[in-house]
Image (cartoon, rainbow, N blue to C red; front, side, top):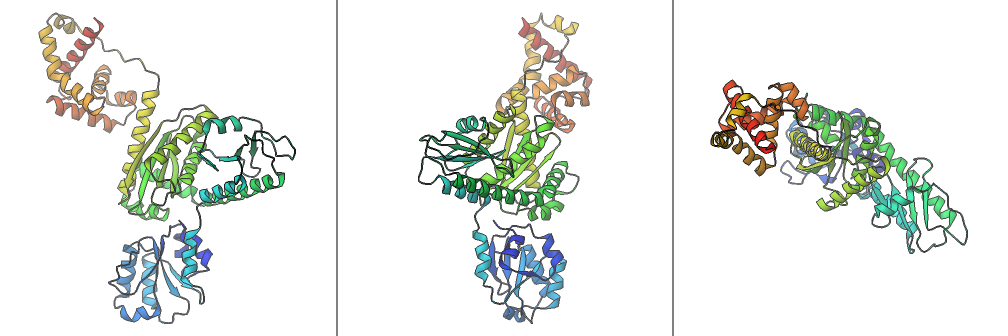
Length: 485
């Protein structure tokens, strides 16, 4: 998917208001459509709208037209550069709505703009380069990035890992070529793995050309990322901190390619160490590159996040995406020795709230995985009071407390996969201290309040009531004393 800036450069379009066009240069463009009348049913979302000179006389409310175009999702307006009927009122309205007006040079066909849409994605271009080298041979070539592997055949992660573990070398002519070669692209430092099971004779000149072409393509990818990196990281931070209304962030998200109607996969990864945080964000950008959609990546706190569109993805199925995540996880484990805790969530973008929910849901799943793989921490002691010892001699009374106070919570936990009973136990063991309990459980204090409120609704008791707290404490301590027996 080309951006507005790329199409302007590709087709030689001239912006009438350069500052407005500059602010919109990163907006993705899905195509070009013609606008003939106010009743036109042509889809305009994420499109450049071409307005011919003869149309102006049929438009009465020019300011309203600009508003309609922007509301319909148009990225820019295109007019002929020799259009003498272009109304200044319309241009002013476009400026007010941050809608760029572009001039189409005489003699430049609309097809040239459309041809800019057909440019292959960076991942596809890299695969074509690799395929060209490996064509008509048993040679397999893989470009090994931080978060994905792009190659001439399906990724054999074990084989790739063994090859890149070898010392880097260069291809030399000779009658006894090696069965595997690990090379490093000189400019980008990216690993290149080559498997040559039949020991086919290699041409050093062709291999040097392959390395040079891949380095150039990777450099192009990095230039595009550098232009977006700061903006992407800031958007992720704003979405997660929620200090600004999500609706206010929608134009920003849209300028980065997260347009309404797009299917987006949100990915959250718990950063294992501070030394790997930047590497992990790069890995998520590589995941987006491999998927083929638009990606917005950044880090916040101890998490790395990505929002990846699936609408134009080259590998758009859930199974394909999960396989890509498995490769990312495998690469990270091989290189850094960390088993990543990853969570994902899917959403259809309707508003900024959808992006927020997607990120939060993905982070919850990542945290759940991290807790499930962490070494079991010893439970905080729940001292048994004298009353527990006395009640333990009356099984009927103990069973009554369990049935009334604990069974509803246990049943809910078993049905929903939640941990409400453990939350209640920790809260009581820490003398009902809210901050200490939230810290011990690794959750936000509002999440703790929500869980305890759910327990109140399940049992009909009140956590704020000292009498009910005592009953809960007795029921839990009796349950644990019976287990020890």
